[in-house]
Image (cartoon, rainbow, N blue to C red; front, top):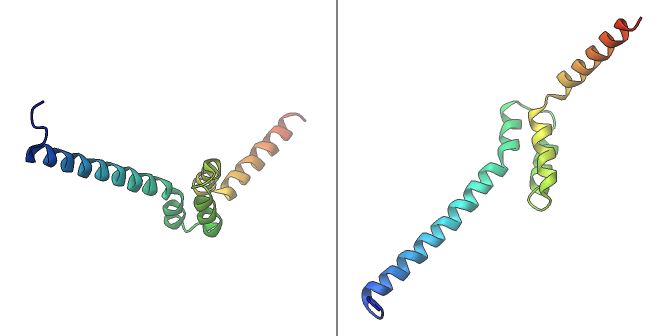
Length: 97
C-alpha cells in the first residue's frame, strides 16, 4: 500500500479531518441562517408579532412543523389577508342576491 505509515499519510488524514470539520460547520451555519429567515423578515417589515415569530422559530429547532408556522406568520400580512377574505366574502354575498 503506497503512503501507509508515512508522513504523507498523516497529512492526508489531517486534511480529511479539516475538510470534515469545515463541512459540518458550513452545514450548521447554513441551517442556522436558513432557520433565521422568519425573524429577519419580521424585522425587515417591522412585524407586530415579532416575539411570536421569534418564539416559533426557536421552538422550530425541536419541532420543525412549528418553524413552518413562523414562516407563514412572518411572510403573510394578516390584516391584508383578512381584508381580502372579507372583500371576497362580501362580493360573493352580493352576487347571490
